[in-house]
Image (cartoon, rainbow, N blue to C red; front, side, top):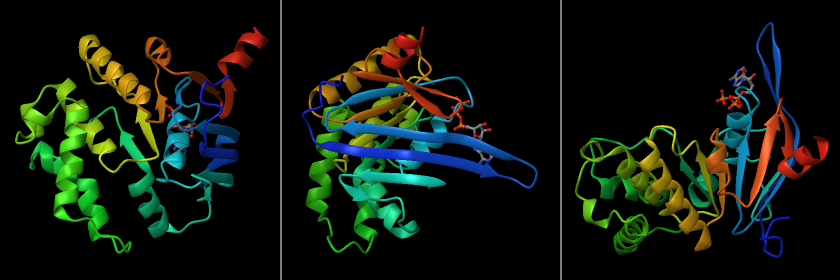
Length: 244
Ligand SMILES: Nc1ncnc2c1ncn2[C@@H]1O[C@H](COP(=O)(O)OP(=O)(O)OP(=O)(O)O)[C@@H](O)[C@H]1O
């Protein structure tokens, strides 16, 4: 049972399905997934190639919509929202960390981290962030990942491990409800991979809610609750152990 069970629900998926249809083929990528993540939790999702991990993460991150089912973030139903409303909630509620760091080499580390907040400012969401607030948030995020001294560098002047830390700062800068993490160590050697995982663990200890997809069983151990996706269906480690 999750140690965060007393906490508020951060995100709740109920009976989520995802069907991809092409002219000849119908692929059932997700078959009725239920998942509740509590504030402060750290969960991992593993499973074989093609089991639906990316499809699920895309739905959780509001990059894609489910074919059916309900999805709540911070108690708000987001399953029926249009593209613009989804983008706004994604910007405010979700921080993404990808295997490929997805930083922009033409601008500084500082500006990379500021980008989600500048985008938010440009959005007609009512509340505008002032430059001083952006500056404070960027500095704080860079400090959280111990990269404050590299703010003026370009991403391609950094090691892979440092780039991933900057990507984590960019994910944290908007104080999201949840970090969605997709194979965070996939492009790193084991030393840098271990350091990134230690950082995620520290962030979780400090209160950040994390949902991580990983192939690496060693890193899945960092999570409080481990889930497996098998052919589009969610199975918890507990259920797997009972079945064997
Ligand atoms: N855009 C799409 N159109 C059609 N089928 C798709 C599409 N995206 C994914 N699928 C199919 O849905 C299923 C789940 O794919 P998904 O990418 O979610 O798996 P995964 O677990 O992330 O795999 P991997 O570990 O290899 O990245 C697969 O059978 C895949 O071929």
